[in-house]
Image 1 (spheres, rainbow, N blue to C red):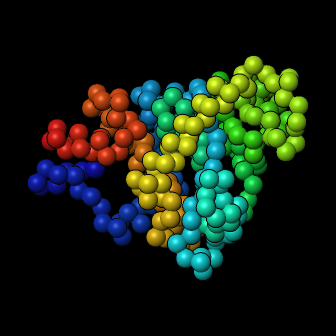
Image 2: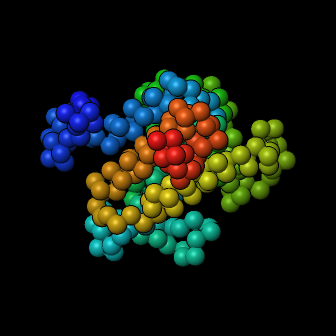
Length: 250
């Protein structure tokens, strides 16, 4: 941004930001997220070798939200059904930061989103993942074959106990230790939902929720970039501690 007479960056007004966003031809928050991921890849903050795919519900702020839907809640939730949205996330396990995401109503199944997430990430960032970890909701022979044949990666996914009873011939990569490494995405959801208040944002409508998800995921990457630039890699996944460290440095 250009500097003003006082030496500080000149921040455009909200009306100017809206006009520039319309002239850009692409949604501003989503484009900012992709640019932040590219910056993290160039700085080797995100390696994108070991990836995790999972989803989490976003509760609707109002029951009258026209774009929200009623879907099944996670097993650990107190209520069996929730009204809202669902964010499907592709995460780098090494850094604990998101690479790509897709938003849907809460009543949509997770399985169809795994392949689009990977295809978009490979196309946008030219990454070459080696391991892709999923839970039982994404089980499918076509998806596993596509990951192995097209991406030349290893799919680490448990058998769905509702469909498969025999577990005597599991591949060696589908051990309890390997499947346990998928907990990194649960910790990521815990950070962004609690610290950035994404669990139930005071917004309604598809556009507002999509913008909030994009800005929240972008903020998590910017926190990692700030920690890396400050020489504090242990603070990459600590938003509060990074802000406190930067404030003390000033």
